[in-house]
Length: 112
Length: 117
Image 1 (cartoon, rainbow over the protein chains, first blue to last red):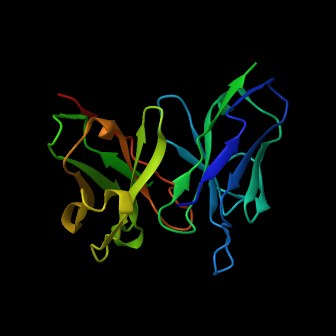
Image 2 (image 1 turned 60 degrees about the horizontal axis):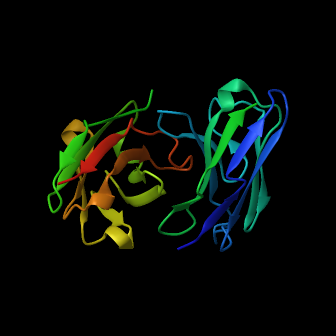
């Protein structure tokens, strides 16, 4: 199975400041179809996860533009340009390039 | 709009089985696979497998192959997952989520399963 490693595991950010989370995979997430199957999710307290970004950098419907993704191969980054109070929660990356899909451990974002 | 409604919380003894349902609405049921995942305390997310509602075939993670079965009911646009030979470490919140290009873009509300003697 592909191992997904996120850093940091926790993050405390002042509102209005940027934040970034790294996700590294033990194997390339580039599929033979040319797409890279790397996803970012946010789980707010007591809620189901919500998709933020798919295929590295495509924003899901309704996701604010302050969320962006970058990277390739095995190294990926989620960036929040200006953190807002509603962004608190657990962020995790996931791949689906092969079976089984696996997840990062999660990064807990809190507001200072 | 897309909605996935899961069945309620369950408590089982070790060795028993549990069946969880996920009713899909707001889109054409046969168009997208439904996946099952779980989130155990302190253990992060695990993918159990996915089912294609159009054909009823499923792909199960190797770890769960001997204990998990997935099924669907076209008449009620509902998918099911059954987990057998339950152990205490199967205690988790189980989620269904829709597949597709926007993978896991829509999730059910979660079903808590507690396995305890």
